[in-house]
Structures are given as C-alpha cells and as structure tokens.
Image 1 (cartoon, rainbow, N blue to C red):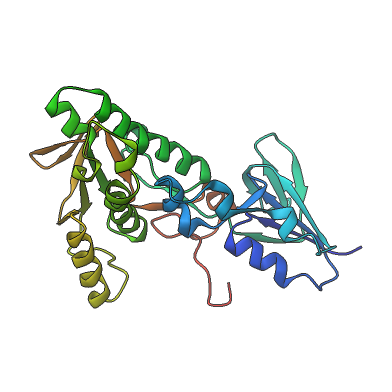
Image 2 (image 1 turned 90 degrees about the vertical axis):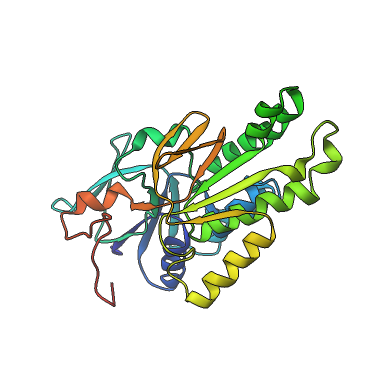
Length: 285
C-alpha cells in the first residue's frame, strides 16, 4: 500500500509541497478549510474594491486536477495526534498519516487584546477582505448621508495599525481609490478629502526590508497624503476611536495589520515553538 501523506493547508506552502510530490507513489491528501487557493499578497486590492474575489482565487482541486495521487477535502483541522499519527478535524473526523506536512498559515495577533478584533479587523482571508471592503465603502456612504461636518470628517478618517507590507499596501491604496475611483460616485462629499493615518510602533515602516526601501515607501505614502506616524504605540481601540497614548484619533474604520500568530495546529504537535507559536525547524524542515 502506498504511504499516506497528509498536507494541512492549501496555501503557497501546501500547494507547492503537493506539486513537488506529483510523481511519487503515494496517497496524498490535502486538507484546507476552504476549497480554493488564495493569492494572499493581493487581498488588499479586494479589500479596497480594486479587484474582484475571483481575480485572486482558484479551486485547489482544479490546480491539482492532473495530479492523480492527490485528493482534496474541505475541512478545518483542529489538532494533530502525533502518537496515533492522526489529523483530527473540528467535526471529529480522523485522517491517518504516514507523513505529515503542516502548512496551516498564520492568523491575526492582537498582543493580548483579542477584544480589538471586532472593531479593528485584520486581513488574512477572502472573508476578511470582503468584510473590510464593505466597511470601507460603507464609511463613504455614511459620510455622504450626514449633514454634520464633524461626523462626516470622522467617517472619512481611516486608521491602519501596523507598518508591515499589508499595512503599507492598504494605506497606499486607500487615498488612491478616494482620489481616482470614488469621486464620480458621490455628490455631497469630496472623497479625496479622506484622511488616512498609518500607525507603526517601530522606528520605520517595512522593518524587515532594507532601510532604503523603507524610507522610499514612507516618502511615497506621504506624497499620497498619508499621515505616517512612527513610534506610535496603540494603547486602546474602541468603537469609533483609536488611542495612541493620550491622543484619541476618531475613526469608525480601523484596520489591523500589526502582527501575526502561528496557526493553533502547531501547538498540538508537542514540539518546540518560538514566542509567536511557530514550530522551530531545521534548514531542511
């Protein structure tokens, strides 16, 4: 009997692992909570209504359609039982494996404040992007509706928390759509008057990139009218407001792009992990 290889996750890591095993004599099972592969780097364009969801997704089964040793199941993994060599899903189904590849991705990290998630959603999935797009477009609609100048200014205020790639991309796209895409759709507001604030707790945005690139990105954002604040540590987020120390920024639309945490699946493996919950691996995995 061919050995059973189970891959948890149909993202980049899981998909490329599956393709690398295409010619092997194995029974390959790919498990993912959705039935589509998502090109996550472009999620921000769906969130800002620049791309449609179908532009950045493809069915996992279609991508592996020529791979006869592969089966794809849409199910959510809850834990791994390494002693019994079983993958257990949220509906308590069990899938035995001889070899296991965990490529479950990451989730949002709110640094001890999970209550912030309801008022400051993140961007990891297509559902996140669609909800965020609705929230952004609704803000412009509410600004169009009100006659109160202060309320209108608040609805046209957007705060992005986190100066990594996702935060920078969102902060740069928001003034672009406000200036180029939305003016023809609204009559009572100047959409290009929208105020975008990017809050980064560190000394520069894109901290994992070369300093020259970070500086260039910051200058580009400033040229778009983005208020880039460095060393800005968020102390609280509530409905309609973000607290940075003693300052309160009024904004009904706050977007979280400040941190990642590993999938909880890794915790069930019983192996060493770093402080972010990521499984420690060797160069050859």
